[in-house]
Structure formats: C-alpha cells, structure tokens
Image (tube, rainbow, N blue to C red):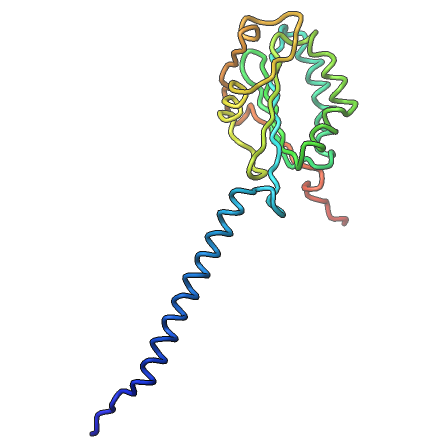
Length: 202
C-alpha cells in the first residue's frame, strides 16, 4: 500500500484555519466576560433593576396597645398586598412586644406610595402613643428575594432611622436594637394579591 504524502499547502491551510478558530473562541470568551462584568457594574440595566427592601421595627410600651396595633396591622396588610410594585413581605412577632416588618418593592416610588396610603399614615400617627421603640431602614437589593431577619437587624443597626418618641426606652435613646428572635410560628409571610391562587368556578 502506498503511503499518502502530506500536501504542504493543505497543511498550511488547516493550520491557518485552526488558528483562526482559536482566536475567534478567545474573542468570544473575552466578549462574554466583558458583558458579565458590565452587568455586574450596572445592575440597573434592563430587567435586572434592583428591588427596594424596607424594614420597620416597633416595640410597644404597654400590653393594652397590642389590640389596637393588631387592628391597624390588618388594615395595613390589606392595603399592602394590593399595592402596585409590592413584591412580597413578612412580619415577625418578636419577644418583649416587639414587631418587625419587611417588604420588597419594585422601586422607591412604589414604596413611598404605600407609605403615604391612608391605612399606613393613620397607624404612623399612633406610634408615639403606642411605642417606646420605633425605627425604619431601607436599602437596594440585587433581587426580590427577602433577606433574613439577621440581615435586617444588621441593616437596622448600621443605618436605621430612629422615629422621635415621647416615651423612648433606654435602647431607643442609645440607638440600640435587640436581635430578633425567630421561630416559624412567630413569622407570617405576605404575598402580592396578583400571586394569590384563584379559585376555579364550579
């Protein structure tokens, strides 16, 4: 059997083609890397707009205020789940008559619109009477996933805004926040009305 002799011109063409393909793959990989880095630097681009997480902490100064707070909370929750831009939330009934609320929003305008709603404004006016501790904080999140209560406590400790009160506790005066005590039965999840399952008519 005769042995085939390699064609030097053909070999050169193959080598050139392989080199070109390698360069093309490298350019593609570089372009992809630059795209990823660009998205990381500018998280507001396209559908990746950052959500707003808002957290409130209240502590009642007396047991008799539990009932009116509970009544006001029900009205607020009904408004909350129907608010445009609301992505989800949760409430934690902490120890020592303290309460944490957390909500995620599409943007600041949505959050502010809810804050200015009738139900929320009415309850806000009663905080000075009901509470000896009250604080709020909000921040931008990379997605609409709700953070842990530990993260909420950290954010509140680092950047929380104290609401002026007539009967502040020692912790409130010193800007200190007790770490929340979590238990499954103490937490309630809140979903936007649009995500509630619809009943099928019989």
